[in-house]
Amino acid sequence: MAGNRGVHAGKVALITGGNKGIGLETARQLASVGVLPIIGSRDLQRGLAAVKILGDEGFEARAVQLDVTSEASIAQAATQIGREFGKLDILVNNAGVLQYGEDSTTEKTSLATLRGVFETNFFGMVAVTKAVLGLLKAAPAARVVNITSILGSMSEHKDPSSSIYGYLILGYNSSKAAVNMFTVQLAHELRETKIKVNAAHPGWVKTDMGGANADLEVPEGAKTGVQLALLPETGPTGGYFHLGVHMRW
Image (cartoon, rainbow, N blue to C red; front, side, top):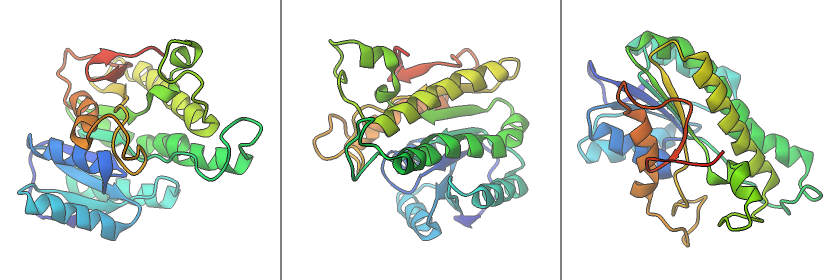
């Protein structure tokens, strides 16, 4: 584990893809309420740069090398977190990719592209969750937040009045629909525990992925994930939310 050192008795959160954009802002907002964010970054140096940004703002943070497409990297990160903290209070599965470089229709999307998008957006999310599940169970009442998208909603895609009707990106959309199903299944599997599992749609956010024309600034985009990460005991599980509103599956 790299970054600011010292004993931390409070909650600990792992944020995949936490070195920039919504991930970094999620770390910032969690740190502002006393949670120790562990920034998972494929490039450790970028993770450490994010830790420095937060440190300069007065927040404690750590960084861990974590490539969600590498089983070895995931296992090593989980081992490091377990060795240092013995638990994990919050997991924010934030790492994700869009679909670039080719037409996004079924006819034009290559299988290589489809597999690549799913590798990060879905298989990587499942792999990280499985690797730290024991640490989540060791926490008093853990929270799992899966960052999804409105583009994973089949109800929205079928509705001609929806803002995303006809917005067809085969790899990204289908991977986020899979994230939604994973959220529902994991929440059901953990229903007898105090762990809550929910999916968060950040909105259309001005990040590298969302672009400059997006509706929301990054702090607003991180809000939903942070809300779900800090849910009280009476909060929901197995849901799909944007700023407190349950979305259509």
